[in-house]
Every structure is written in structure tokens, then in C-alpha cells.
Image (cartoon, rainbow, N blue to C red):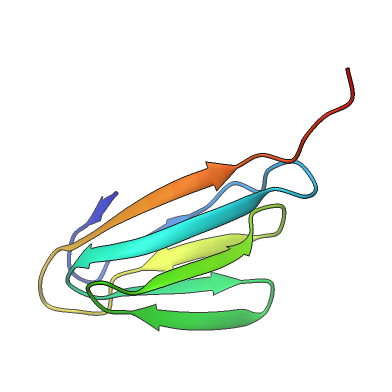
Length: 77
């Protein structure tokens, strides 16, 4: 994802048990999830529950670039 300076984006909660892995490539990114928040700088990685309300914000004066990998919870056949 790429967020312009000062912008924000809401995440969509996924199925129960889902994990999100978020890494910052450039700029700075703030993640809020489940009442906690993290500030990520380039190279930082955070893992959080993707089944809860979450959002992203770029507090910096430059573009923020981040990558998200989603590990969905297994489902019964």
C-alpha cells in the first residue's frame, strides 16, 4: 500500500483467527488495531490480529509504502 503524507486508510476485519503481517518499506506508518498502536519505520514488521478493527495512517511529510501479508485462519471443509 502507498499512503500520501497525512492520509489514513481503514482496514477491513477478516475472519476470526486471521493474522496480518505488516512491514514498512519507506516513510513512516502508524497502525492502530484492537486498541493498541504501533509506529513503523523502514524495515519494521508487526503481526496483529486481522479479525479486529484496524487502520493505517501516514504521519510523515513523505509517502509511506508498506506491504501486508494476510494469513487467513483455516476453515473446516
